Image 1 (cartoon, one colour):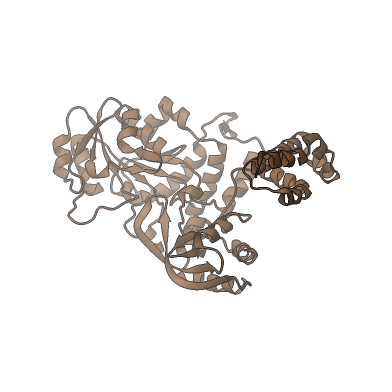
Image 2 (image 1 turned 60 degrees about the vertical axis):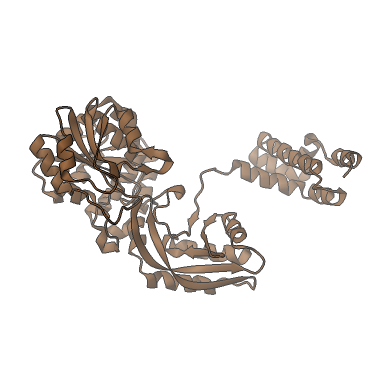
Length: 469
């Protein structure tokens, strides 16, 4: 297109003032305000100028665009004013999908958040005494009930910080600042976001003392490394990968025995940190908090938004004297959590105390059988009415995700979707552009939908989106 032709098209674009006087925008300005509508109009007109400049619009297509200018501005305004953080439908079958916010919260947690977020609370107020209290008392009482099953020889306590990385940092800084921490080379892990154990140890002020090799570390390696500068034995659960074959690793109990013999506490970083035995859910090889404490670990660190099924938080459970030292560390105030975290964590822990595991979405998803998921998939398939899309229900596997139980899979039934005119990637993109966005998997030229991670009330939304596409 010549520059002259483009100039003629530019002249056909109305000014922002003219657009704002359009009858189509009167109600929009009244409801959303002149400033917001003006910004949306400028954005839409700027987009048209760019399309003219790129040669994407001719006279006919520009006229069509100008006819729909009011709707385009309204659409732009909705997009601009929409929350960036949105709910999505997780149809990937990855239960603890880090990119999708990991564990969804229990309904009781949502109710308690709504109740406490809209009112003043007794976050740090002792109602009975009428004086200042401590914020962590709201969950420590529940942790004490849950940890009472350990029947430890010493009193156990728990504190909460903002994530597990913070928990590890606080524990290392409190227990081993300027001292040595012994850890196996096979446990110097990196998790999401390039978070590495050696790096957090450096930040904590502790000195890393590596022992053993990547695949084999013996108890004798720890024993030889202990000296008068040793402050802590650290065991890191390899939660997001496995080493198989020619391997060796001391048990928690063996390290506990060595630590007590030499007067050095043992800390275990579990990462995911389940509060129940996951064998009942078909998950094997994943350590749990109570098991580590029963074995004698002095401090255990773990996450709140993974296998626990609660909010993002870093939890430290263990010997009360060690936990008390961490609570007194000035870092604890910098890393502590707010009332909304406690408001969602308390009902989650209450569900564990009552053994109401079905109330915790993560555990509910893990407990779903292949048959239950298959029945839902068949029902959804029948509710999609379109000649363009082909749907088949096939066998598949769900995974835990979130750096938990890397070798464990759960048998499931998948909805395999293909489209007559769209590639699998194009179809997946169309699903993501739905409202709410639907996040699926693409494998072997098909879109795969796993209903294990889809709430039952969301099945109809997937069927409607597929029908529209």
